[in-house]
Image (cartoon, rainbow, N blue to C red; front, side, top):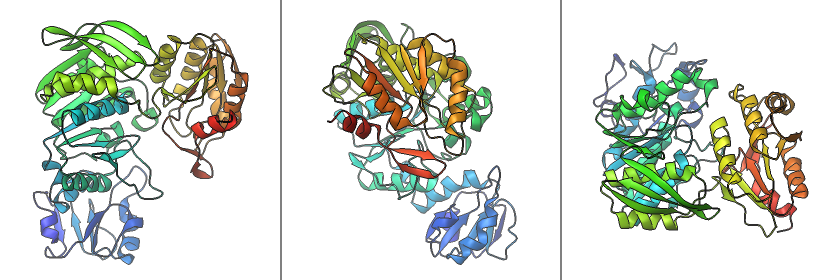
Length: 485
């Protein structure tokens, strides 16, 4: 592709390169530069990408795209904002794959994004649509998992280079419906600039990512970004942030509620156990009986969001009811490990105060013995939530085991100490075991018939991150091997 074609409909401050230069790829990662690449210099909080220009040109880059003139004598193009320009450049490079879809649905919020996205995919699949899914646990092109480069992180919302490769692969497979999680990081860092969202869905807003956004107001402001571009917004009107975020939508506002209000609302929970939940739905002037084969009362919220999105896109009730009642659980979300023990072991990704409180509240509803909670908190992340989560775990459990969870550069003992500060005097006995594997084995050894053991925080993750980097780690394998299954 010619350089001038790459910049079609993108504002340029200054050309200092041959517009007819041939460009073979676009990247902001100097480590992945190939011969003929355009290197986009992102300006970060600590490092200006221009420092990597010499390295990128040694690898074969032919032009640098910057916000300020580079010090190195190389061909360059100046734009006002390289972060906003990157997805637009990639859209041009891949011939606008995002415009080929019938609909793109973005889901944002602190909790519930992943489960809601899988519910939506099940519904649209059942209705005969060809779907693509982009989210925390996997990227799917129809039902095929899209491979991620070795050593790369599976981000909730992928970086633009991977996102547009995904879009292009989806176009090639004839995908008509894209369902994707839109993280606050991606929105704040302008990774989704130019993506034409037809629907934006808001699940909730609770404390998380304060290490990045600094304040809850900044966090909320990032979430608003989705609704400034979405044609229609679907909102959880029970959430305290509803009023402040819903006015940002560019057109129609649709609401859902588990408290009997909103366009789509739960009238009454009819039954609830470890197999799923049944409730009455009020919408469109009538009531529908809904069964979702995912346990937990928060399933009502997630399914309401999925139902609202489906109905607003014209999906019939037969597809909705059948998909929700037959869908499999989502990996790492209130996931029961299939053991033959007289006690139950659940894995859940709960890593925020609100998510931990919700999962414990739901497990309590069908716990006949003790509710035992094992969890830790991530290192190099929001420290203020650690004592809060310690207090929640001890108030809502019968016994708590505080351990490690992706400590990164921090000492495990320091993180545990922060959690303990909130656990002391909060309502139940607890112990601290620094090594997570040892902690899991201890929980299993102490289990009694009827107990429910919750392993919280890692969920779908099959790795652990510590001072030595990222290495394989599977809670499922640890549990099954320890009990001899």
